[in-house]
Image 1 (cartoon, helix red, strand yellow):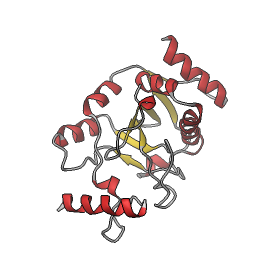
Image 2 (image 1 turned 60 degrees about the vertical axis):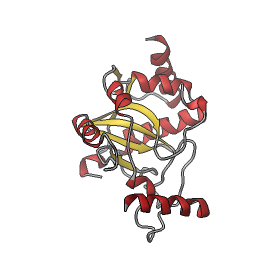
Image 3 (image 1 turned 90 degrees about the vertical axis):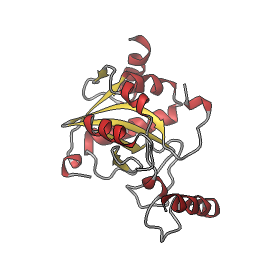
Image 4 (image 1 turned 60 degrees about the horizontal axis):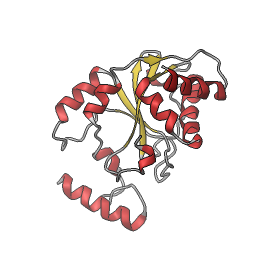
Length: 72
Length: 131
């Protein structure tokens, strides 16, 4: 049943550029098929997390983030 | 969204893997992430444009459904449609979707952004996003 819904959703999406399903536009396609890469997420939660200083400007925060990515 | 997610003044932290990806993004996409961080810090989760969901809502068709649900619950993982490369605005504001999502842990008064990834069932993104 779900496979049928997804198939019809894809067809509908191609015709309308919409993410909504053909079934009365109630269930977005993405909501019925969410998943994630488990191995990637295991690694993602197993690395250090950095907290930036408060009250940085946008450009200061950008620079801080890039520095953490490149220098540590 | 629960009441806690409407809180203001949330601290945003960044995981190392996410920071490495951030560093490789074009400036316009970095700006979308910075928009999100600023919004969270100043306004909490209220009135965000994109869809924001707990990540334990995994498709029951997934062959690894149970382990993914457990992992998402254990680490309180959520994902937010960040607007990269752009938003599909077919749904109402607050439920806009995009091909890319950020994955974050919601830990009390902090969130930790830990990954940037594409959202199935979209097709694979260009290589420049896969560094």
